[in-house]
Figure (cartoon, rainbow, N blue to C red):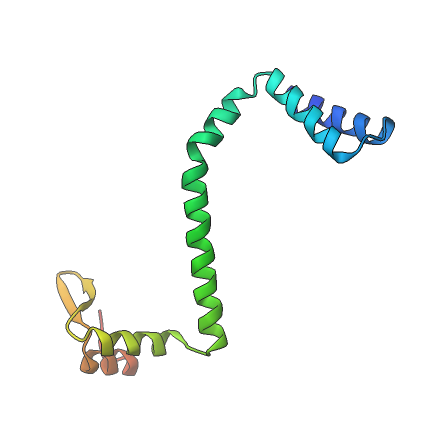
Length: 117
């Protein structure tokens, strides 16, 4: 908490009173942070950056697919029907030991609300 307050104080003092450019302010904050024991943060950052970048890329891919589906006006039932056509013998749901296959008959029963789980 004290470190955060001192970093904020240096930021305000450097920018408002000394009127330094943002590059110099950022560099001075980095030096102050690293000088006050901030290497732990750097070490954690280096260890986790690969995982974070991978997670961000997965999120961007999902967002791109959702946008594409919205633009094409493809709804969940349409996507489900296309999956049924591609993989008719795969299992769609497993509930209490019952296996519901991805066939056209099961798909129409689900749409009609006849299939009770």
